[in-house]
Length: 210
Image 1 (cartoon, rainbow, N blue to C red):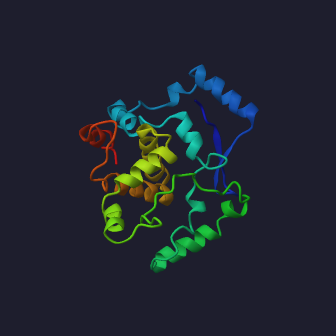
Image 2: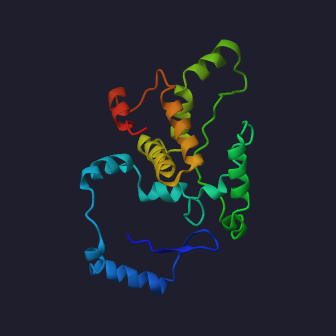
Image 3: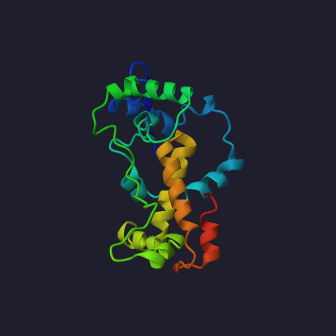
C-alpha cells in the first residue's frame, strides 16, 4: 500500500496529492526508482513492530478511524477540561484552538476516532449495595457484556482496538489513543473471574504490548 501526501504549510498538515500525481509516485515505487536514495531498513525492530500490530486488520481500521482517515492532535484540544493546567499547557491549548488546520476543516472532518465507550463506573437499575460494589471491583461482567455488544464476541477485535489506540498514541501523539488504551488495560486487569475462551496465561501473553 502506498500513501502519498504533501506538507501544506498554510493548513499546517499533510494533504493528499491528486490521483494523477499519486499514480506517478506509485509507479516509481513499484519500479524501484527511489530505492537507491533510501537508507537500509532496521530489520532488527521488524519483529517488535509486527508484534505491536498483529491484531490490527483492515476491518478494525475501517471501524475505528475518523472520517477522512486522518488522526490529528489538533482535534483533541478540548478533550480534557476538568483538570488543572499549567501556564505552558494553557498556551498550547490556545495554539491548538487557533490552528490553521482547525479553521480549514468542517465538523465532519474533525471528528475523532470511533473507539468503544468503556464505562469507568458500573451502574445498573435494581442493583445496590454490596452487589453493585462487587460489580465495580470485578469487571468481568462488564467485559463479557462489551465483548458481545461491541466486539461481536471476538477477543481479537478488542485486542485490535487496544493495539490501534496504542499505535495512535505512540506514533501520532494522540491523547485520545492514550486514554482509550488506558481504559482497555484497566478493564482487562480489573477482571478477576473472567471466563475467556482462551486461558488466562495466553491472554496475558497476547496483551504484552500494553
